[in-house]
Length: 139
Image (cartoon, rainbow, N blue to C red):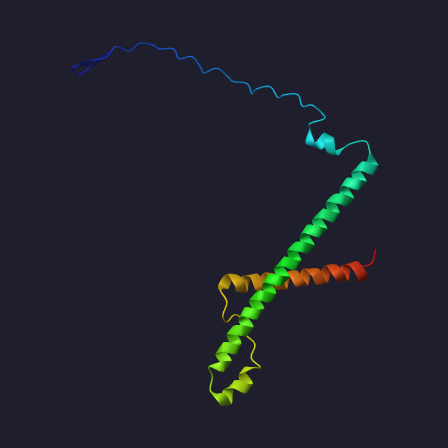
């Protein structure tokens, strides 16, 4: 082929398609090590005992976490009360009496502490719902 002053030699080149790779074979699982098979044992008593143990542990962990959060919320509220008493003490004498009645919603604490108090309020609501459902909900 001649294009202007450039000579090109075009050859037909055959390009082989890339080999098709098949997925590697799946290993055969031993039923004793398979998670789904291990949980589906034939002993219903053992399953029930495991369920009760897991439920108790989850309830205990949740209760401990609720109590820990409650203690931290009380510390934050004490910090708010201290802030309010300091601010009330800095007021003139004639305004200190009414200032003791004020409630602080976010004074003297960081945003993270305020957000934690909000989550604590939600936790109390959830706990109240659980108690209500335990005693007053129909079967």
